[in-house]
Length: 119
Length: 107
Image (cartoon, rainbow over all chains, first blue to last red; front, side, top):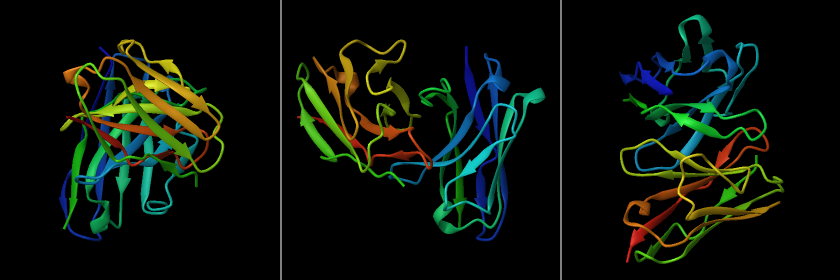
């Protein structure tokens, strides 16, 4: 079964740091682009960041550029999101998601999410 | 950035109804439009990608249409398990952007 499992969320003070992890199983992790998407309590989905299969290409939303760093360890089938300089407005459920294919860039597999609270 | 607009934010429907959920992009995105379903406490689920291609395992009562700036998700013969929030998302350019969602509620 293809699966993504996030971890690393928690309660942190403004200005603090966290590192989220997303462990993949059931598919060839290194072959896929991966993204992070977040959802504030009671709100909609917001794209955060993406990384290509070998980790050489990354992109970020303006709201997190310069504060968040996406990376991956293909040997461990794990995606990361390092979050520094956290703000109250970063409070959200953070999902990792796999891209189905390079043509349509649709997120076909999602994790269950890990909760980040900045307060 | 490309803005995705979903209106209405909610609609009421009955089991067995045909429901259409619109989505509009602020600029042409060709067919780079995906639809997701989200139920309370659950991760989003991909329903349709490339504007009209049904994701594997998704019931055929779901369909997507449109290109350019105007898109529609249609649910025929609405089932109890279809009451959820539906999001459109463009994959044409960065940053990826989602609509604000349309909640389908029981009438």
